[in-house]
Image 1 (cartoon, helix red, strand yellow):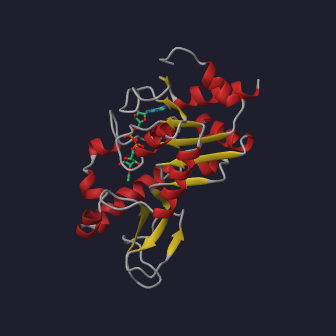
Image 2 (tube, rainbow, N blue to C red):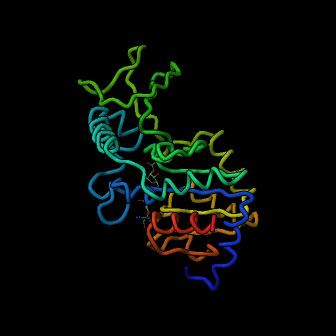
Image 3 (tube, rainbow, N blue to C red):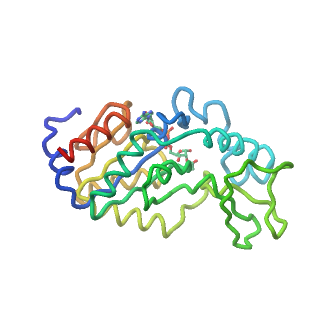
Length: 246
Ligand code: OAD
């Protein structure tokens, strides 16, 4: 905690009225899921423009699918950590609780969170690139040869948001509404550099929320947040949620 007192944060958690939480890759780091930036980050070893843009996919769908298939196989071995579990518990105790995530891994749902706003989509879903409207849940490893095909024969793509693409307007609007009405807005495990996701914390601040950042590293949000917990999400969230019930 870098600011003067924990009391306001603790009392906000003790009397939860309206809480919104936004998570990023760091919340899944302790489940063994690599983050995107920083040492060991996914975009360090790979060129994001080849693997996470519509242009890269149009150029080489097999290369992109090999990358996503490998990520899916690894994610299939990962399980929720105490940070995911603490957020699922908090949802049960708070009448107005919103969980907004930039993650595509589905680990919040696996931990028991019921209402998750997935700003960047879900890696376990595939969508048709021809626009027949088909979106399929497919957890099984991809059948060879890649890329997978839709029943309409078109190539399927991972149902995730790539660089240069728009977020789902309805999901972003719901997330913005949650940020605007929150008394407490927690930002957990994100570098807060990708827009428009990062703008939600600024919206919450402008709307009067107490903003708490949980991140071992400094981010552009750090100087704006009311409280900064410089520690891993699992320890911070399980302690905070545990404190809420004592
Ligand atoms: P980043 O990789 O940019 O940032 C991860 C953050 O997690 C960093 O600030 C780390 O300091 C922090 N972190 C690492 N371990 C942590 C831990 N145990 N507890 C808490 N925090 C920890 O990931 P995101 O901010 O999620 O988009 O990236 C945002 C978007 O950029 C992603 O959704 C993805 C990426 O390109 C798309 O793929 C569209």
